[in-house]
Image (tube, rainbow, N blue to C red; front, side, top):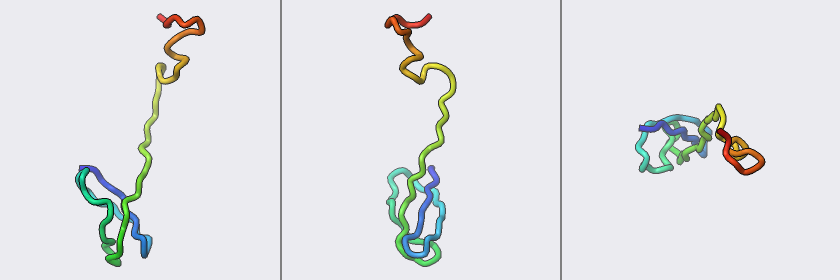
Length: 66
């Protein structure tokens, strides 16, 4: 089950909940009971090694590297 970050629109309280993928994106704040919305956070992905750029797969002549 994924952990989601929520922010209250009234008091600004940040909190996390464990929910399923199909859960609602709006829930009540545990402090003031106002509407809270899910905060989208980018995933931290680091690509290391060769093969991630279009110049890694072929040479300037169009033939693949060996």
